[in-house]
Image 1: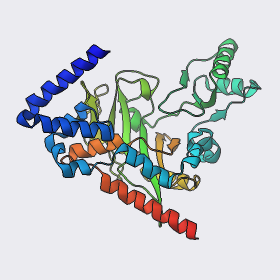
Image 2: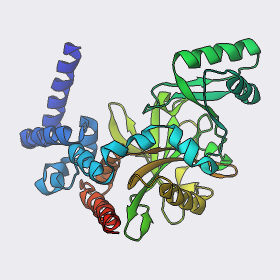
Image 3: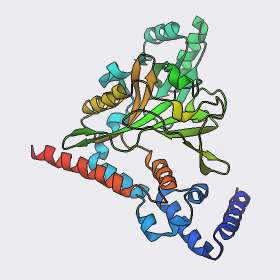
Length: 345
């Protein structure tokens, strides 16, 4: 482990001198600051370029500590459990699920076994978990013996959220058919109601057939035009050794990103706006959305959206090394203003 770390440091130092010459010490200092502030990898720093040496550009990035602090001001920590509890979306937003879900009660196997017998394949998740940790995928469960084994395993691992696979719209399956390609959308409560800040993004895995986006070899992220729902022509992804770059087509399917328009786009925007009103405890929510053949569906909501780091680096890649501090501060100001008005009323 130590040898690998030292090799990585040597390789980084050599690349800094090769790339920046006499400015290498300044570049190294800039990289150290961005790594501490954002957890930015060297490949991401390289992708943004030497523009990051500018103090003005460094100041334009919102650091992760500051981001969490501001989030806690509009989403009090005591209320974060509302969405960290995965049962909330199932119980409060059943009309937006787009699939059958079961909150398992392991004191009685009947409901579980009936659900599995009906669907034959399902996701099982822990209640309080993030990033796909504690999620199991069950396929081709056909016999009573197989169903009982699945029941015993879910009970042992406390997998209490049982979900039918979400059917995906053919327009998105054409990009990548093996898992649901998810859209990340944000809502923020402002003085004039629910706003949709930031550019929405579609996440599309690559690397062959996988059961879960979290086990794919890589991930494309494509911005979506907020008005038309059309994908941008180029997707972001990280190529070895973690360098952010762009592509126009999917490496597995050959599908062109810019030719895809998200189906039911207006319905998806209306859905997350309405969904936010059912979670009044939180002012800022990151929604994971799927598009089914029959319309949009909510996968889950995130009380503290983890999209900031990647979003900032992608935007810096596009706009000369500037972060998105102003964009986030505008959103926080709106939410804080709405909260203050609510307290006065």
